[in-house]
Image: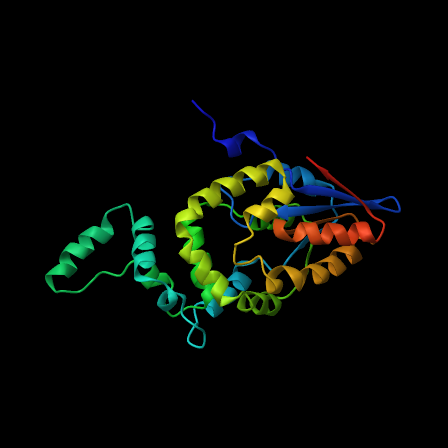
Length: 274
């Protein structure tokens, strides 16, 4: 039996950051992941005093973001911007494999009502970034998040938990993702499977430079998400690194900029496996 590639690999997007005999760790995360990295994350966090995340990860905070994302009345509609052929194809790809939609359709056809597809249900009336993340996560069908998993491990280990931004900061950043970039990525839906496979490969290899090229068209590779936030994240991480042993988790797309800032300030930054 072949073992899936994710099962054979270890977490490689970890950097040891050192200065003045103080050692901490910077971790680039995959917000969506097909497997659990629980063992690697537990080993990493056991020696940390403080664990930092981009923003709050408790259920109540995430529910605030979800509720806000569902209110898209004052924003342009991704659904309305898409070509009908793109809508049909994405709906086909994300159709419920259980057959429930087909049964419902058979009944609705009798009364001349068209059953809603995935995008009709999840991309209409919501904020553009919500339409994208809902659709993309459904396409990936991955059940894990490294950030959330690390958060729960840190809680269980009794670590001090800190955040680099507020929920309001996160929402502002999400609203800043260019609408055209989101629509363009929907229009590239035929390449999503290839993007998924390449991302999996380069992430497991810890090859961040290849990651940057692979994800160049991804909507979140933008000034609002990366450029504006990297300096803010660096400032918060550096302050904690100077005081105590810390492990900081940020999306892997933030790691090149943050690592450069540490190097520019005389830190030693080494990529390693736990």
